[in-house]
Amino acid sequence: LFPKGKYILNILSYKEVDAAIAIDGIDNVTIDGQGSEFIPSCQKMNVISVKNSKGVTIRNLSICWDRPYFSQGKVVSSTANSMDVLVDANYPIDGTEKIEALMDYDPVSRMPIARFDLFGSAITKKELIAPQTLRLEIKSKWETPEKTKYVSSMLSSLPVDTLILLRHAIYGQYGMDINLCENVKIENVNIWGVPGMAIHMTQCKDTQINNLTVEPKPGTDRVMSTTGDAV
Image (cartoon, rainbow, N blue to C red; front, side, top):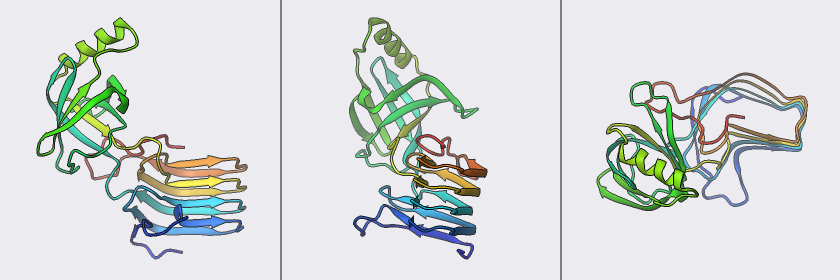
């Protein structure tokens, strides 16, 4: 049992430890957060890892990374092969951040537009041209002439103030990593922000998931929760 509260997690100083809470080969264990929030402050960790175990229950907790592994901003200008993005102050940047993918959202509905969904390999140059402002140069030649024409036309006509989401990770760490287990139960869990999948599960059987919510953290302006898949 965890007394209800907020727990800041950091294992940067530990070697050969991949999770803040790790269960390996232990049966009939319950992790009850009693409404607590677990807040990792570094990317290179999973929050909960369960391996080779039976009868494990995880319940009544929320998971959300301290600094989400994405940034949000708006288009201030664009050309046929570049865009300038003013990143919101809630997502401080210095220009060194890795960008693994970017996509566009409607600034009003805050839903994906999907005019483009580009991987970081499409960015040929990234430059901080002013505080919180990135210039992203996009490759000018694609697999086919049709795609080259489409991307060029799309970028050059990109409306000012289009919301841009920059993912600094896609498939990184997990909220929960569960492997080689039986009879695992996950109940009343919120996952609000993870640099990867919310729950990664392999070679398990008889798993029950009840009342799992994967969404952007309530009360924030975020348009994304996990940078990878939910489950």
